[in-house]
Image (cartoon, rainbow, N blue to C red; front, side, top):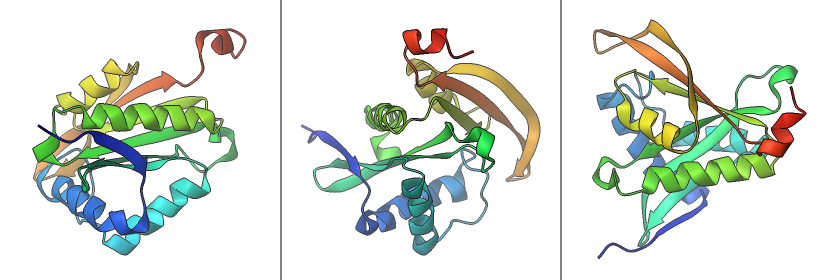
Length: 177
């Protein structure tokens, strides 16, 4: 029996494990368009950027082991985008398919809304990343579009899939347009 997944704020001490998970995606996958894994110090700096924007940076802890992490950042730095965030979710491949990504993303959405953000954008690397597209769709994201052949990694041209979800409830959306 697997221990329960606990979603909690990422501590600095968790960033070594988060970096190891992310490095796998950078070195072996196309979900991230980075080609060199950032070091732990850079991962800590990125965590601080999220926290300074009052956005979540979370880990999934299963029995004392970090099996995934997720966070939100401001979508773009210009002031007009100040109520829009972008999410990122990374799960240890050994824990994939067990609800870790869904639990993390649901909490990121909840905490981002509570912080006053109105829209969440998903910028998904590689249109073949059906797991990420499916996860986002399951949590209410809609396909906005696809940028074709905008990234080159592992000798392949890759797409970027854009999805969006409102963080407002239906009554809040009525008067917001």
